[in-house]
Length: 630
Image (cartoon, rainbow, N blue to C red; front, top):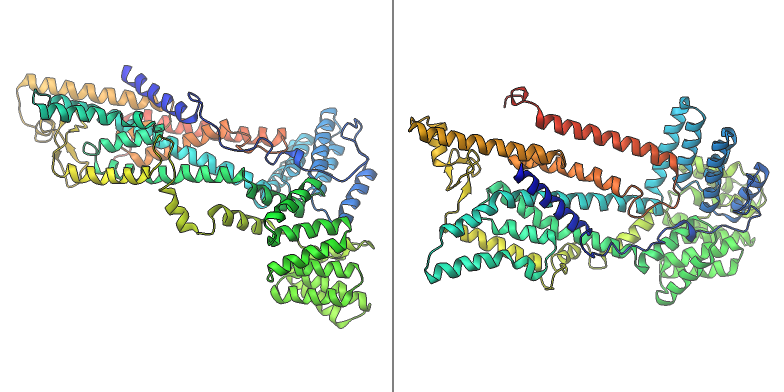
């Protein structure tokens, strides 16, 4: 039991050190106000945030019509206020109006996932029998969370962060298992070769000094564990060597990817992508406008920023400025079909029908499968004459390509030009492409993979740590071919040279165990009794250590017994659950904090964790006789 406690403390200490709880380790460089709700703004409204009475439908309909007239797709601040008001009404018992306000919140921000979760909460609060409506709303919210750029960025980064740290923490546990098993052999080898010879003293002193190298270089805990496991290269099995090489590769790329992505998210490049997304999909924000124009001072050829500024100016009614921005976007990117279409809209608004038709045609030539272009062309032809074969042909083609879009705009009965033509926006796919291109750089993905090996590792030295580790592995591999190394007998735990049972490197026991338990030799009774007692004590201690620590780290027993595939999977899943609970609101938290989805998801995750934990414990604790024969 003492050994189990020591191993448990070592694992906990290492994980806490890795997590930064025992050091002044800086957190990831994420801005506190990154993606916060305060960065969004809404047009002037008469509905004050401090207003205590709920807004009436007439007022909301008026605001919604203003939103459509401006051509704005999402107003998250208004949606946020409506969801909060919906929550307040549910507490008062007015569930029907709470549902209506939640539905209005979706109308104001159809691309954000939070309003859908708010509606799901309202349905659930009304009646448990509305379970199908609850699930449908949550499913719609999850779709929006995956496909809308600001939300999907947070969502996927949170997943990447948790998975990456789960992998690294799993390998910390694996490394500690290898160290606990084989580091005594390292010292046993030193003590066995102690003598008064100067050469032997120097070699043994060197072996001790080598153990302290991670402290001299101030390597972090991951690289220190990797160093010590590599140092035991001659003592460990072939399977464990392969895992250590995998450990090295993961240790090169995963922290590098985490640092690169988190630094990028806090950079000006990422901020500009967020500004572009806001300009295209949300309200008119003067700070976003200023940010994008400042970017143009340094990057005047950025067609996507020019396009976004043109869209914002058009919504404000500044058509000449919008025209200039669209023309510059086309100048720097002649293949930007959405800019041609939107420029055609500017001309159509100004009654310059011929020029509008010309630019619609150019947009269609660049992308002939876009229904919105044909619909805008149909509107332009309709301005010339009420009945036109060209208009009818364009309308039919638009309907073939995008029937839902055409039906939606065909039902609109408004003289406002923003309501009858379709302005294109930069979609999430284009924004993701921009993010990856800027994150990876002009050199490409191969250079990015190569660069990871030359990234500075937290230590006192700044040069090629991974390359040195790789060389260290190669050197030790060549060295062990010239020397026999001890290993630990899996039956009695004694240091021994390998006595093979089969063709694989892992199939061995010590010579005495081989004679006694394989060959069934009749040895002296005292020798047999002593050896049997040694095997019994060692196996009992091994089982105790594995089972005891498995209560704290599910799957540890598999690692301890050498079942690495099962062990790595189980420990990894365990850490995923733990990190999910720690970062419940995400590394980049959501702007809206809604009780229902959090409560629902928390119950789900806790239930899954309990099921996983109990299954692992049951598999480990069940009697050996119940286990299926292999």
